[in-house]
Amino acid sequence: MPAPTPETLRALTEILSDVTEYLRENPDPDEALALVEPLLDEYTGLPVQLADTLRALARTVQEHQAIPRTAHVNLLIAELRSAAWEQTDQHTLHYVLDELRALHDDAESGQGCSRCR
Image (cartoon, rainbow, N blue to C red; front, side, top):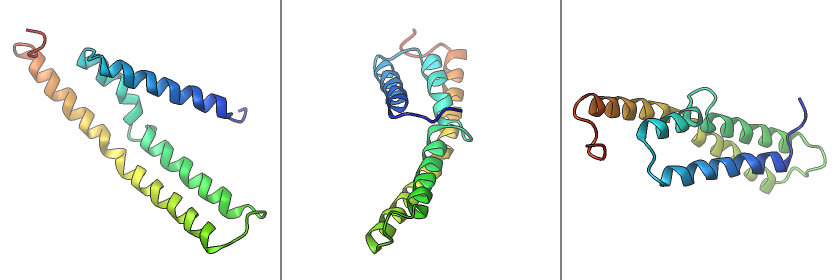
């Protein structure tokens, strides 16, 4: 696999910005939930991936011989690891999506949502 580039990652964040803008236009809830679902997947979603990325960055900085081992560097590494745990805690957001989908399905199976009536 070729190494990722900053340009590739900028393109990915641009796509995420596009999704956000699209969701601000109030699309159909089924479509909105389908778009967000892969982002919040409990195993491969953004919270888990970002947490893994932060841990990998912390490990890279910690193991790099050219970076001096100072208290400040150790603090920065600890902050990366702490942020990684905070991101990992967000993996449960997929349950929120499940509940929203169930509520939407219940509303649709009844009379339809208020916007659709």
